[in-house]
Amino acid sequence: MQSKSVVPAWARALPGLVAGCAALGTAQLVSAFVGPETFPVLAVGDATVDLTPAPVKDFAIRTFGESDKAVLVGGVLVVVLFGIAPLIGMLALRRLAHGFAGLAAFGVVGLLAVLTRPEAGLLDALPTLAGVGVGAWVLAWLVRRATGDGDPAHGIEARPPLHAAEAGAPTSSSTSGARSGEEGASVSSAGSGAASGGGGGVVERPAVMWVAGEPRVFDRRRLLTGAAGGVAAAGAVYLLGQTIGGRQSVGVARAGVALPKPATPAKPIPAGADLRIGGLSPFVTPNKDFYRVDTALIVPQVNPDDWTLRIHGMVDRPVEITYADLLRMPLTEADVTLTCVSNEVGGPLAGNARWLGVRMAEVLRRAGLQSGADMLLSTSADGFTCGTPVDVVMDGRDALFAVAMNGEVLPVDHGFPVRQVVPGLYGYVSATKWVVDIKVTRFDRDQAYWTPRGWSAKGPIKTQSRIDVPKAADTLKPGRNTVAGVAWAQHKGVDAVEVRFDGGEWTQAKLAEVPGPDTWRQWSIDWDARPGEHRIEVRATDASGYTQTDRLAPSAPDGATGRHTITVNVV
Image 1 (cartoon, rainbow, N blue to C red):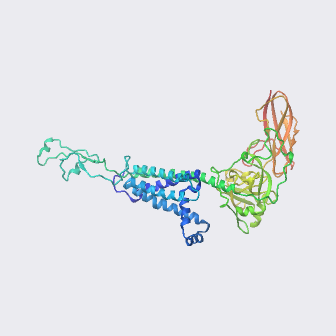
Image 2 (cartoon, helix red, strand yellow):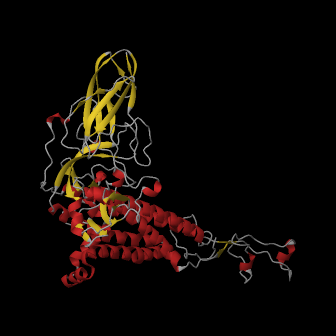
Image 3 (cartoon, rainbow, N blue to C red):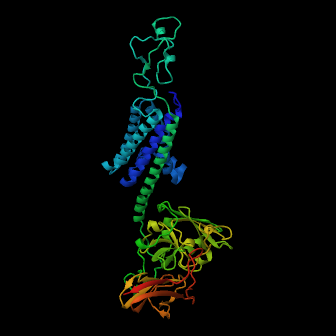
């Protein structure tokens, strides 16, 4: 412990700085639920804009362009955290009530900014009040840690005057030397007679007592550890509030998107595309049921007003387009089944949807692909990268920068505002969500996220089939039963599905209709089941003539192989 009453300047400012961080973090979190506009920093920024003279506004726009609002908010944060908050800390270490008064004044400014907005309500004050309350608690807590665990009402320099324990006690210059350390222990002679007035003896001195208690001391270590914990907690709360608030603001922006009609509509889904068998995957997978596999621990919240797509690298003309630019381009509608490379044989990681978007080939032609380019290295808003073969995207298939899914604006979990959809490729090499950057390059120069992690650089989808009805280990009744499922071979198409029971002969299943080769295909077969345990297998043949192999292989490095097989009981 550092035992001195003189406190360094940085230590005086630190409690206020940490309390300010805690106050802003709390206000950010609460405003995520009340409304992002109730965050006091934004409200103060808006009030500043309203009160700023027009010439100053014009200067800011000319100087900072579209970043003027970010600069303003950043300036407010700098003033609060590095100007006002340290001053509050200095006041609190002199007397805590002064620090509370400074924090309250800070809160009043925030409340005025929040509550003077048009259509503001009393509930809008909650983020500021919560922030001030938490900030006051943190301030008091840090002052206690810096000066001891007692009552922090007096500052570290509020040392009371000395009073002797007895009114008539002697007060010589040696009195201070009679104290042992800081405990006021008395020192006496072995011979008590020396106190009666004999010359030269050691004179007994009375214990010196501090009427207001022991003098307060500065504890550097406890202050620093408390400050570190406070900053970490405040940062976590602030980020949580931003994430929740971001979801709400992006949700509002998404709700405001008006989708243009497609210039190239998809073919109508044939009436016989969905066999409507209980337990069978529907031809169109509802958005809420569509599988989601990605590397994002927290789903990126990308506002379409801020979104841009940059195309660069081996191109003649680097291109950068906005969301509005994309919606103005001719849109194509397409039915495409997506499949994850991690899907095991018979697994659920596949889904079919009607997508709306701009052909990737059209955008890439605007940039002008250079000779030798064979890879599109796409990057997500969260930093994920994906490598897609150029020739696949440019061969005429419905490879899209998608903006809608099943007739609605792309859900946030599935890549809003823009994602890639490429028929015939596993998602890890094609289906980048929240895509913001395309580098035109070569496979021998760049690697995408999954390649160094043991997965193939290229991932064409393998022909697969799955039994949906019945489920493995189901118990069935003897007699006529229906066996049904789906099969897929994107961009080739499924030509046949066969089923066999207990290792017998393969029997052709009935196939549903499909609008094109890029979707999965439902199938069914009737089976006269006899009592006992039975084994059911399925295999598909695609339009190229390839029939699924029975050789089992894991999903790594380029997709699983084998035939989906289940066992059921008939009783």
